[in-house]
Length: 419
Length: 165
Image 1 (tube, chains in turn blue, cyan):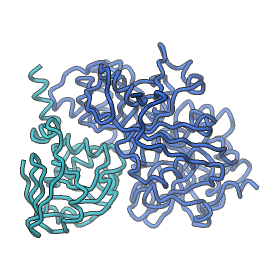
Image 2 (spheres, each protein chain N blue to C red; image 1 turned 60 degrees about the vertical axis):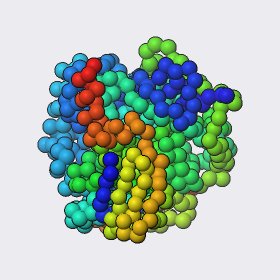
Image 3 (cartoon, helix red, strand yellow; image 1 turned 90 degrees about the horizontal axis):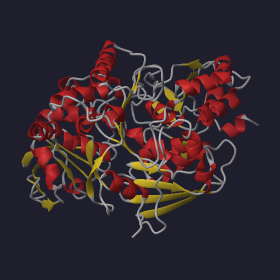
Image 4 (tube, each protein chain N blue to C red; image 1 turned 45 degrees about the horizontal axis):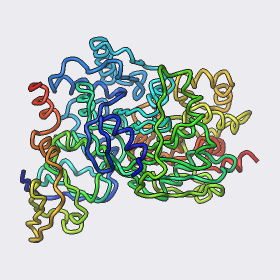
C-alpha cells in the first residue's frame, strides 16, 4: 500500500523499511530546536547525567520569548543558555534580536524538506510548510534528544486537506486556516498529520503556507505538511547547504480522512474568546471596541503581513484609544520592512514598533493586557489570560483585519476600510 | 501501579495557559511552579488538591503550548493521576515524562463526579468508582510507557539508560 509523507519520513528516520500509522518507532532526529526554554532543557540535561550533546551541529537555539530579558529571572535563563552553548560547542545559537525561532530557522537555512525536526515549542509545526516532519516536544524529551539524538514517536494517521477556489481580496491564509479550525475543532487533528493540497495552497506564498502550518497546531496537529514545490525551492535554494531531498506521498497513500474546502466565498474570519475554534465571519463581530491591536508573531509577522497592513494604514492615523503594536518576525523581515517604507507608515499612523521576537503573544511582556481590556491580534492563541490579565479578551484575525480594526478602533472588515 | 484518591473534575479543552500562565514561564523551580497551578482556571485549586488529588476532565486536556511546566506544576501541586476523555498530544507526552499516571478514557468522564473517590489500576486498565460502585476498563498504555511512569518519569528512566551504556 502507498505511504503518506509522514510515514515515509519516519521510516527513513528510524531505518525501517515498511512502517504504517499506529506503529511506534525510535527515530533519529535531524534537527533539534529550542528557544528561551533551553534553560530548562539544559537543567534537565544535567539531571539525567548527560555530559556532551550528541551532535552540536544538529542543535539550534534561538532566543525569542522574552527578548531583551524582561526580568532578572529571564536574564539568568539567557545567561545559562549562553554558557551552555559555549561549553557544548553549539554554533547554531542566535541571541536576542534575530527574531522568532520559527521565522529564523528557515531563513537561516536550517530547514530542508524531508527532515525530522523537533522543537520545544508547539508551533514547530510551522516547518511543515517546507515539506518537513516537524513537531513540538517538551523540555525533558529535548534533554534526552540532546543526549542521544533519538526520540520515540507514534506514526500518525494523516488527514488530507484540499483547499480549492480563489481567495477574495483582503482574505488571507490566516482566514482560511481559522475557518478550517472552526470547522474541525480544536482537537480535530489531535495526534494526526495533515497534508495540505489544492489550488489555494499552490497559489499562496511560502509565508502564507507557514501561517497555515503554524496555526494548524491549534487543531491539535502533530505535523502540518505542505508538499515541496517550486515555491519552496525558490525560498530555500540560496539559504540551505547541501542537497534537498523532498518527500512526496504515494498516489495510493492511505488517509484517515479527506476534507475539502472551497474558499472562493470566504470572508475574513475572527476567532473569538477564549477558544481558537470559536470562529465567526467578520460581519458577526464588526463594531466590537478594541484597546489594542497586535500585528506580528510566528503566525503572521512576515513581510507580506506587514505589507498588507501598511497598505491599509498608508497616510492614515489609528484611533487614539487604540495601542497598535507591530513586531516584525525577524531581523531580515524588519530590514526589508524599513526598506519598503512600511515601518515609517506604521510609525506615522501611530503604531509602536517593538523588536523581533514573540512580543506580547504569550503574555510575558511588551504589551500585556489589563483586566477588562480587549485586543485584536494576528497571533495564534486566544486562551483566557493568554496575553495578560485573565479578565482580558483576545480576538484572533488576519493582519489585514488587525490593521483595519486599529484604524476604526473597533473590529472592522478590511474590505470596508479600503473602499 | 494502583492509585487511589478523590476527584477534582473539569470540562473540555483545559489549555496549558490556564494550567500554567505564560507570565510565570521564567520560573525554573518546580515547587515555585506548583504555586501557580491552574491559577487562571480555578483559584481554589491549591486548596482542593490537598484533599483530592486525581483530576478528571473532558476532551483535549492540556491543549496549547508545549510548556512542560503545565505537567510539572500539577505534579508538584500534588496531582497523582489525570483521567480525561482525551489529551492533547504534547501534554500527553509531557505528563508521561514527568511520571504522572495518565488515563485516556471516554467513559470515565460520564461515570465519575466531582468529589468521588476512585481507584485506578494502570496495568490492568481498570477504574473503580468507590463512591458509586461502578467499574469500567480502559486500554492500558504500552509497557514501555508504563515503565517510564513507574520509574517516576523520563529523567529517572534516562538516568538508568545512560548509566548502563
